[in-house]
Length: 378
Ligand code: SF4
Ligand code: SF4
Image (cartoon, rainbow, N blue to C red; front, side, top):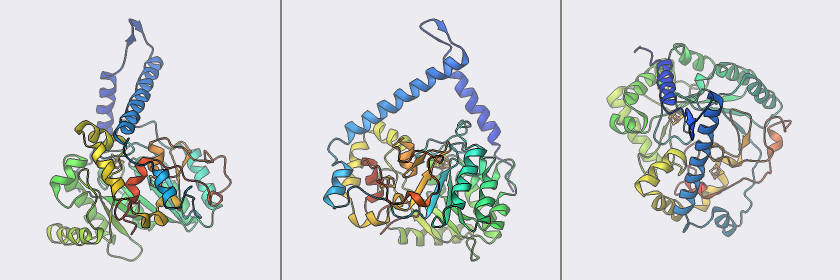
């Protein structure tokens, strides 16, 4: 196995970067570290505000999503019985991908779920018989020190567990037995691999990521992933730019033959996802002047047949701090849901029938064949 990637050195780099950007004074008045952090937070909030205004400006000609739903006779969009609890366990990640909708990175150490929030999630899960699946995402979820406790707790209740894994996390320090742990708990691994070519993957995710991902899949295959029943390994594709994914079935066939012939690795299914026009990806588009065209393209490809399968209809999303959202995208945009957090409900099952908060980014889920955490919808 190759040497550990050492998240600790990436974290140290990120801390050095932060220090370089630390604000020591404002208008000549020296600041304490706490005051300095407040200034940084305020500036980040201003950045969010500017970003929201830019998106609003770029999407002025796009019909509001709510209006589109009204035309289809499905407004408000309501949740069905939840079958999946998706937990975003934290934003800490060993990678810094260009399309990341939660802006994860090695510097996001604070936004990590604490043990008591996690215990509350397990408690809610134990009271929710309809919620049969726990879907753990991040960041790199495995880097949260409570990750394994969450997995063991949920599997002990008989829930199916999904780990949204970036693959290269297997080579981090302390993760030497991670693959074995996942296999022992029959965890369904959903792993990002945005392309079967090294060039395209590394452009989105960083240098060496493709090679390390292939090596990680070899390890998983040796344990039975992608081969044995109950050890499911799905790969995730997302476009390398501002365009809709090609048909999932054709792409899956291409992935299967290229990965088998060139690397001798196998997987179960390929999930093709659309890039959501938010956060880093929206910033990239805005800088290149392509945001407006991409939004118009998504809206022009609206497909009403995707509405019954939207993931927000049967999934409840909980963030690292215990707040509840309709989905991870709404969480990234801070579009809140009611009820607000894991302490204001008695079970996940009781969240059926509530109105989903939507906005123009939702066109990313309804364009063409649709897009969800489980791939295309129609
Ligand atoms: S691996 Fe996933 S969470 Fe981490 S930066 Fe990339 S897209 Fe974001
Ligand atoms: S972004 Fe997608 S999953 Fe989230 S609320 Fe909108 S349609 Fe639903």
